Length: 349
Image (cartoon, rainbow, N blue to C red; front, side, top):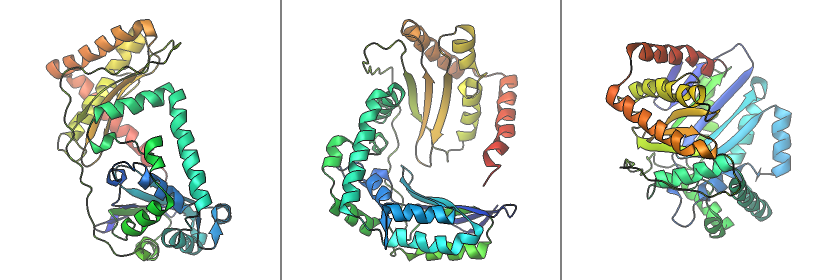
């Protein structure tokens, strides 16, 4: 692994003729104008729905011929352009990606189709208890914070977005000022720099900037949100708190603490709720963090009659960990798990 420059990372792997890459542009979901939540999402999706002389179908066909993938997605961290391609087709893929980034077709029919599909996806969340629960959990956890905004927008905000907004958003915000760009696979550092210069580098000049994301305020006391879904025999439970970002010096110790508490199938939380009491088959706690904000979440889905006891037990277990800490045996076991499982996450490009 090597940094070619301050924003370009390369992990060489010449054992297979495949290249995987990603570039992150500074624009992110938190930049969406108020009342037009979902604008970044729609703009990112429209880039792969036709470019240059290729309509949506022809673009997909071309990617298939090249044995390649191309994704443009919007997240809290930025707009990500990523994909993979066979080494022998890199030149053709480079030309195609440049066209996608700089000459999107932005066809009205494709835009209306995308909006209909997005509205359908938003509506489907109502029928998925876990997704609906997570949506309300995030909204309440980040009440008044940019991270509480829905990534795909809402029915009301999508109604406020037209194709002209998308075209303008792309023209003003898609620039060559990347936050970070990286690749792994069968490529040299010189060829990688040429690839990024020809693709992302073909976008207009722009200033590198960081999104204006305030610190998330910890929630004091207990705040309960109930989402009523009649005739359900289980309850989807989410319990959490904003916490430190991934750049904080205490993040790795917190990661070890979460691992021994609820980060594995044999951790404290799973042992007490699943193994000893059989209240929920799935039980876990997790950390999600970027460079600005972190989140600690406990997650389980007991039967209705066990919901309140399970919530009380989970809350008491958190308080116990805070007050009494963990044993050296638990800490060392969690560190071994994290160390030994890490290679599994990086064994392929």
